[in-house]
Length: 81
Image (cartoon, rainbow, N blue to C red; front, side):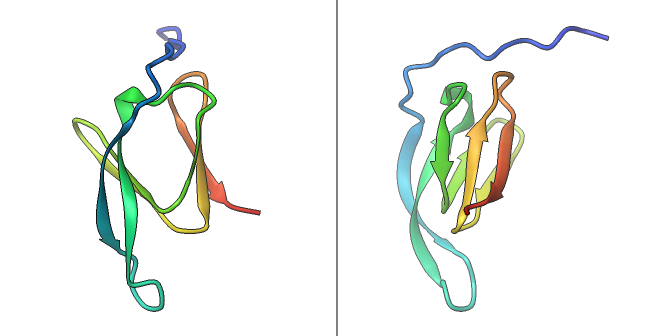
């Protein structure tokens, strides 16, 4: 089993642009940041709505949710309290 690699620090400028994302029903279109996942730093916390893009996937962070980047680059997503 290969060892896990700690994510290195980045310049912290992950936002690429803003875009209208449709969240349906009552929320409708919401202006949201589009973020480059490879430019996120460990410990960074992002409140939804947002979109994370990378080479092979896209993650939509719903309004009222928060994502935290762990030391290995995983996004830990949970409802805001």
